[in-house]
Image (cartoon, rainbow, N blue to C red; front, side):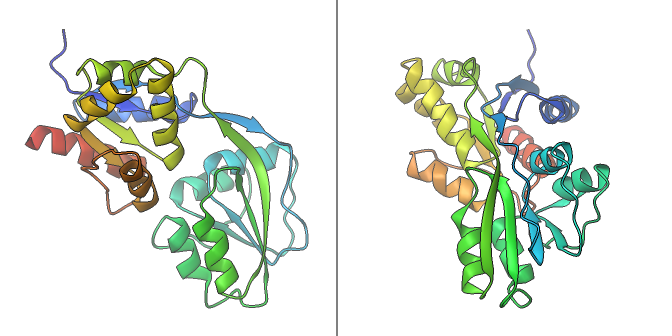
Length: 245
């Protein structure tokens, strides 16, 4: 039996989950892969009359490419380096990546430039309202296109059962929706309160302040919020916190 700390990871069941598990192993942890998000594409593409088009995920970049989106003169913005890399891998030029890889960071980077401009936000059905409200406050004409819906996989919940048994040392939540889906899976299995108690004794890491707020609203005490909103930073700081305790 391994003495490595068990760390739940909730990334979608694709190369992101594989990379996350490999990173955790490299950090000396035992990853507990438990995908809490599955993608249902809508087939939509960004509108063609926008001055700016904003992407907030790798998934969105891949889906617009599959759907045949062809940009013209738009300023293409990515919320962070992973999204930017995915856009470039699909053959798109990226004009802007904010210093802070969050919705607030995108608003801060664009607020002085988008007054009177048409801004297209292309993302999932669970995107942060912070982005839309911030752009609207900056004077932009904002339109949102839903590229895909995020649902909870029916087989999810392994990590919730482990938390309820006290067998989980840490969890890395990468969005508010992963928090909500984790708790929904726990409730479905009849172990919601026990899972929350188990996480009280574990290290809870979240990828940014919006996720931290969601966790707090649901009674989860957050231990780690990395300064850089990437999974690598989240994993490293979470594993370090386990080791330090």
